[in-house]
Image (tube, rainbow, N blue to C red; front, top):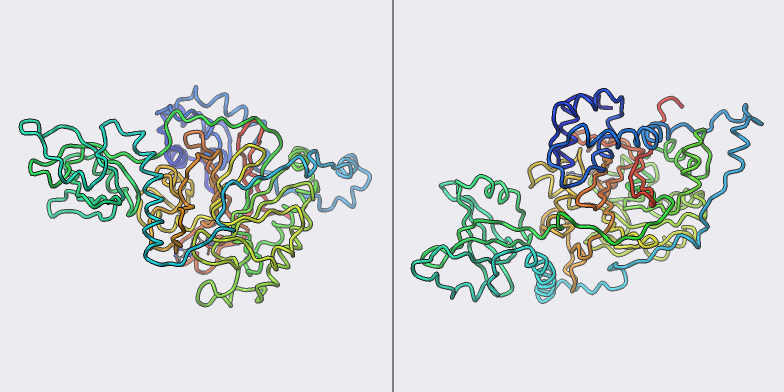
Length: 523
Ligand code: D5M
Ligand code: FE
Ligand code: ZN
């Protein structure tokens, strides 16, 4: 566990998109919080704040003190040894554990999911359809953020001649970044493409801000560029780059709800590194078996458990995996996982989506589990594909396992495995869960692009990178739910440090997030 020091505070503030002044840093160091509390704390600060001052923090810290600090630290204390304490007040209270919300009061509506509709045949026409759909939907979002009047299509742009004497009139084009390169003089040249053609854009090396933005662009994302045409009309000299993103003042119309939703992923049942003991402590917690009254109260009010993929370790996922398997048969892995899920209280509505270790097609969007697997699980489970947009009694959540994070860590400065919400912010900026086609993520060109973030959800939930992170970005709660698998040899080699056995949750009434920690060092 990291020590709370100045560097960590600055780092976490920056991950949350803020700067922080010296006084506020000293204040935080004096509060005795756990490092895990920082992202939650910063998620409560309004996005319009630029530099965090002490005054932004005091109320949030006192709230956190009562509500989340202890919860985060004590998730691991289960009621082991309570047999000796038979008859004690605590045991009696535990025996009275009653779930507050019956299953019928915890509806899940699947708003979008490819599972029943996959029609990909991988032919050229299919690619054309796929990219046209992506372009049409995202370019609309860009259009609404662009101040200059965009040229209707790139094809027409070729015939726009700068008026003589007013060569710097502002024009704009919207297109997909199909190439990006540095010239010998360190300018950046982008090729933008729309359904009608391509057009080059020059970003002058003298414009430091623009260069930084352009460096962060990834292939196949859709942007708008405004600027002036070069005198011969063949290239656009950029003065502004516009990503679709979400408006700064975005406020969702989501209704107030109540109870709790819990978010997990990457359980990896069947792996030798699967943390059985911590996982069982979590299942006990859900059943009210825990010696912390605050946790028992939360458990009694849990309505939803969302699982974002990698339910099992799978087989044949990477070379040499057989040495890491405790259960070597895929259906046996699912039977074991299903047994665990049968021990979860029946009132909790569970939603399960697949990940890259699960036994579904590898290409994204991934369809859901075959009936043979679904039948093993209890009736309070709803299966969806990856990604899927669901509504939890009115609060919308986009679930995506998160394989595109591997691409983003590799290609975008500032995106790291240790701070998984940094990658999720990049998804929102591009309004796309996996912008780059044909890189590490295998994408199947469906007629519709299911990875476009069309309606802005209240919550985006990813997994895959095995680290926990919670951030508020423009009123969207970004959650990465970590893992239940200890560090593997592969992860050791590439220096990935997982943060296992932690469960992010959202209080659906206050919409505030928290993290439960089931690491049981002393049990
Ligand atoms: O992914 C678990 C973690 O390992 C996640 O942080 C990504 C990382 N990972 C997985 N495969 C690769 C490759 N091929 N290169 C780099 N990093 C990788 P999981 O899906 O559970 O295996
Ligand atoms: Fe995983
Ligand atoms: Zn994964």
